[in-house]
Length: 376
Image 1 (cartoon, rainbow, N blue to C red):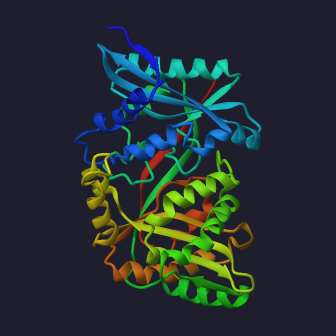
Image 2 (cartoon, rainbow, N blue to C red):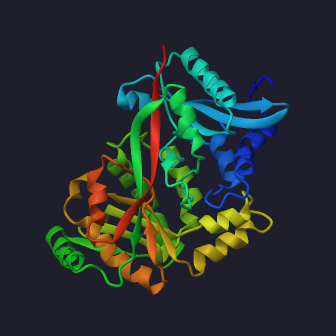
Image 3 (cartoon, rainbow, N blue to C red):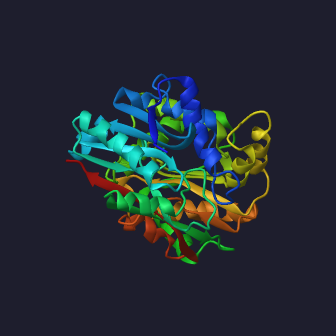
């Protein structure tokens, strides 16, 4: 049967676009579905402030009137200017194990990119670094996280047959939480605080976080700016993410490092109990019962803690600030019974961030890849 490719042009088909991911992976023990409403917010031009400098297109693939695949095309003009390139991105990609389906989807998004004057396409990438990035290429028997997407092993084979080649890889680590903070971290932390006039900042209530909310994302911009594909967050985006993420954080699992002289944030460590199992139970829906599973995971007992944002101001990198964060967090992790931490994706070329695990018992257990294809 012929594959039909249809552009998503209304709210009804956009909901089908989002729901397809959950339908395709139904029953898979490693896939972690996102919340449908959150993904709709990301994809809607009237909701996501990234559309101030991005444009997108969404395609669905049909076979015998049944949805069998999806893909998004994105052009991030700010990123293209930052990296001096004319690339489109593909993302939000899923398809059944049928080469005709994947070929038709990528042909559609490549034609769209050419029509926009782009000479290359890379992905999977989203609008910003806070969207899912990279195709899982190793570690298919490992549970995903809220910050990542799962993919069947055949995705990699399909993309490479279509001429896509490696652009960048991310590693993910499973890190054993030590029973005690490594002695070297203790010594380094005490020296760093005294030498640079730094202090550990903790919060008792959400109202205490708000004065630091924008500072957290400003540091995110500063620390992540040199990294692959990064698109600096605008003030409008920062406001958007502050409202979205700050209310759901566990305050005792946040560690900020501030400069005592001016209260400037120079290090951020934002961690959360794993919500993966809870999201699987929610099956994409916050209501009527999804929120209960998420609340239990957020404040109940669990074995896994996810490291979502670990960042240090460039001025203080390689000066022991990372050690200072774990000097604070390791005792807290032990208090709540966490056995190991998920690093979430770290660029393979970013030796600075990966070197922070050298004093921990850890193993790499997942790899994901960004692909690129030059368009003629």
